[in-house]
Image (cartoon, rainbow, N blue to C red):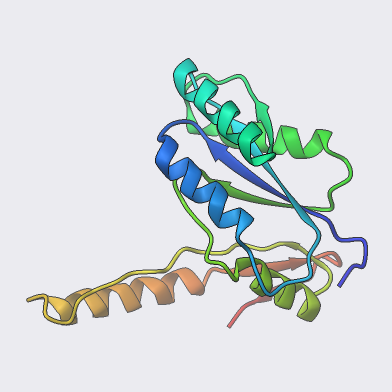
Length: 171
């Protein structure tokens, strides 16, 4: 793993203060890792009330934030995350999370473990595959079968791209 590794966790928010707060807290509450990281909340919204609330929340938590110009489309928000990363040149890696999602407390532990095993990784796709089905649902077996089939399809396309540009398929 690169010794000078520094991760920017960029939280992209555009609406829904309670979920954005949950997301930011999940980033702050990472444990069991030795990674150097900082959080920057990218506020990309047309809602000025939401923007003001998020700025105040970030100031309260002493979390960095950037307000970026929004046209109301998701692609503008995603691109603004890369723009912020591009300007903050002291970071070696970017982790982007949408403000309505959250990380488990050991997310960075797993990233660290992966980077130790594959130190030249340039890009890593982490696919959401959490699903909860209750076995007392009438169609539980079908739900489970459909989920496992979809998961197998997704995982068959996951690739790790290494800096030597060799592509390896992840089992």
